[in-house]
Image 1 (cartoon, one colour):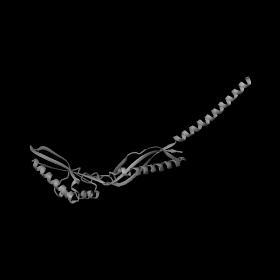
Image 2 (cartoon, one colour):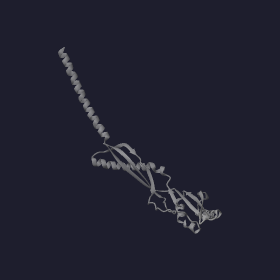
Image 3 (cartoon, one colour):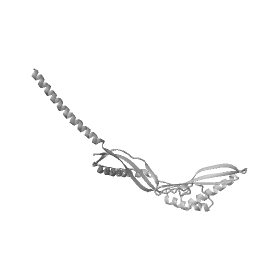
Image 4 (cartoon, one colour):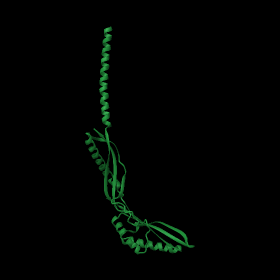
Amino acid sequence: MRNFATQRLIVSSVILAAGMIVGGFALGDGLKRAQRAERAVTVRGLAERDVTADLATWTISYSSTATALSAAQANVDHDTAQIRAFFRDLGFPADALQPTGVNVSQFKDNGVPNFTVRQRMTLRTHDIKRAQDAVRRQFDLVRGGVILEEGSGMSYTFTKLNDIKPAMVAEATKDARAAAEQFAKDSGAEVGSIKNATQGYFSINARDGDSGGGWGVSDTPYKQVRVVTTVNFYLK
């Protein structure tokens, strides 16, 4: 009985040792795989694209001051007629130009009441070429007696961002992978799949810089769309 018990103890010890060895190998392999899974590189990818604006908006501000409100209003009405004629002669439809605000203020100059009538008209068009022509010829308004206030500038907007977003994100991701591959090459590794990614935000700016003016030339229809993505790639 003693010998049998001894044999059982030996067999149990051998099985336990074997299990510990196998478990050790499994644990070690698991740690190695976990370490490999944690090997990653974070890079940024850039995509840029030149586009042309498809919407032009020109808010024209003008005013008149007189000692009588009726006289100030009459001058503003004259300027409004001149402005409408200006855009009509350029080929814009009548509904492209709309009044967007009017303001009347009163003050005294040496005790004499004065009235200022200020009005805004806004041009909104998708005809970018015609809008540029209007900006170039705006001095014709001055010849007609219309004095444009500072800030009466054309603004150009690119509204079709959603049409180019998918392709630009793909370009930025491709650029990020190229950067990751260079890093991997330098470190003796290979680039795997994407661990996670952040798209970033799209920005639209003047392609050649803002002129900084405020007299109808403060913007340009030529824009540059830019997006930066941050991508975390596995390394293997």
